[in-house]
Each structure stands twice: as structure tokens, then as C-alpha cells.
Length: 107
Image (cartoon, rainbow, N blue to C red; front, side, top):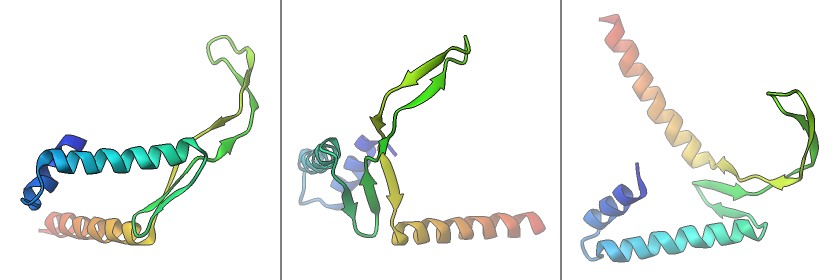
């Protein structure tokens, strides 16, 4: 789902808020998360998951085209670890889909 679709859905579910209000909240939340990650921090949203930026150490790599060995500098990568509630809900919904497909194929 696209960000604009999510904003539209939230505005529809909460008629007391305008689409611009919802967009402001979404933008503020995302900017806050990004700013914390840029500073090297960690962001945890209970039940959803945690974002972090672990440091990947410098290493030697190779150019796949030429085979030349190159230095790959140290860098930070964005990492997301889903929370238990999110993981369980995704798996339960996936199991229901799997069971429906399995039953459908048996007929």
C-alpha cells in the first residue's frame, strides 16, 4: 500500500481529521523516526518492531566485472526487527490463507 493510500484510508476512518491533518501526522512521525536513525539511535514501536542502524565494518570486496579487489568503506545499514505481535499476526493471517488454499485444492 502506498503512503498516499494509507493517508486516504486513515482520513476516511477518522472523519474528524482532514487528509492534510493525517498527512501532517504521518510526515511528522516518519521524520522523527528518520532523524533518530540518522543520529545513530534506535526506534522501537511496541507491538510493531524496532528500527536500528548497525555499523557494517569496512571490508575487501571485488568488482564482479573485472575481478579487481576494492576497499568497501564502513557504513551504516537500516535494520528492522518485527515485534512479536506483528510477527504473530502476519503468521496467523498467512496460516488462514494457506489453509484456504489447501482446502480449495482438495475439492
